[in-house]
Amino acid sequence: MTNMAGEPMWYELMTQNLSATRPFYMNVVGWKIGRSPEQPEGVGDYEFILRQDGGLTGGAIQLTDEMLAGGARPMWTVYFTAADVDAAVARVKDLGGSVLMEPHDIGSIGRLAFVADPQGVPFYLMRGNSPEKSQVYDTASTAFGQCGWNELTTPDLDASLAFYGEMFGFAVNERMAMPGDAGDYCFLDLGDLRLGAAMTASEAWPAGWKPYFRVADIDAAKAAVEANGGKVLMGPHEVPSDEMILVASDPEGSTFGLVAPKKS
Image 1: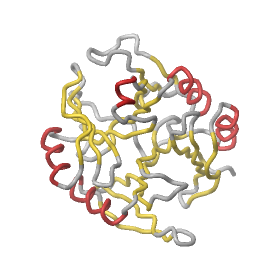
Image 2: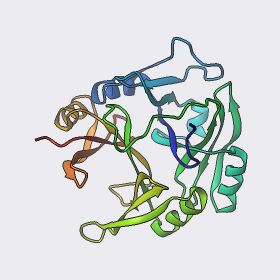
Image 3: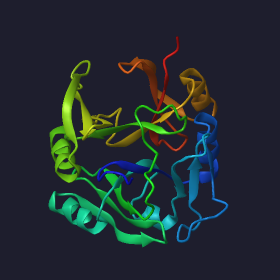
């Protein structure tokens, strides 16, 4: 069974110094990060993020001087499934988005493109060649190191919801008012799959897609963030799903979230 169009199928860390960020995430999330013993054709020095259960969550890439000169920056980004990458890229442009990297094949792995929505938030489109369903995201899983939530912060919430609705069919079936004048927290559904939520960006929460990765103990993860050169930006605190979350940045400032079971 393959992934639905619009479903997250991979997460990628872009970093200026992989030798520094690699141990940070290994200590905080418990991943192994490195090249595969059987490195797939066409991926070069790309490194893979391996969970404790043996599954993959995504990959990590060190940005080159050329990439940095072209505007690339350290960040987390998400790959959304596309049945036809070229057609999806054309759709992005029709809806007011932009193309950062044109569609191209990656060895035997599949075809991908790097694009941005009309508000400038980047993401990948990918069609994998494997018939296997990607297991990088699951709201109900207990696989530590897997992504458990996707959060979009955007400077124009209504315009972004319209774009992703047209692009992938993301629907907002539930909203939650946030404190003060922060606006609504809009839950994003793709059919029966709850992908995450979208909210208005702010100085504290810049625009982008932010993945939340599962850990066993939120307090231990908080301590690991602080001990390894990162910064806790929010939390830990309890959320309505009876889980605990925190938001942090790594030593290069890339923002991500962590989610863990609530302590009894």
